[in-house]
Length: 229
Image (cartoon, rainbow, N blue to C red; front, side, top):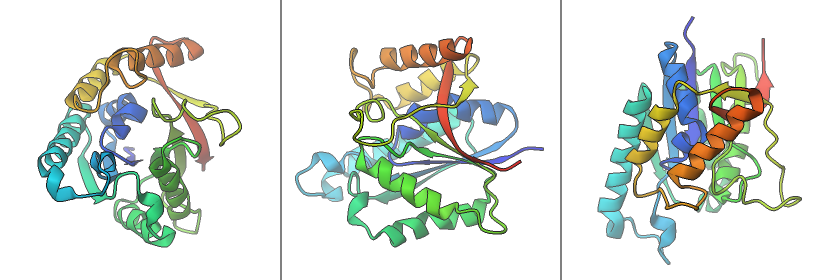
């Protein structure tokens, strides 16, 4: 029986960085994958947030998100356009309610979200909001919650500053790495040259290393937060 899967990502490209291969694997298995991107990109690079000055950039990022979703086989990609790297400026309850609405509408059995200890503040706030939105009340559809790593955020957190990413769930993406790479290339403006952690080369090294940890060609790693069987 096919699952409804929800990937909740802070910014355009996080969904591919964190679980692009897993999205493709779910889609190939017949699952319906929904991608929710909560914050816009790019505006945090301004001194003062001004969407009007970045209309073309934000439009390009939205189109890149749609292209990446199509490449990976996602059923749909929804963007909320909340302030980039400013989710901590929103009332926590307001952010939770924005997450609760698609969860109630889509009723996903499997949910992916950012790791709680990332350097990026949006990743941390979104993790907290998602955990509340998916609290295990009677009738909660989400049976499995997993957090993913994002290169150039998860590994940049110094030891002791936040919870460490200690994966205990690995997904074999050996047959899906090429599609993940293609989806990353759709986000050309967000990729960086080697040896940056968010370069295509570094991301392939990470996939190969995570694969080597569990004896396959390539993998993505997660922390299992909750599983109901």
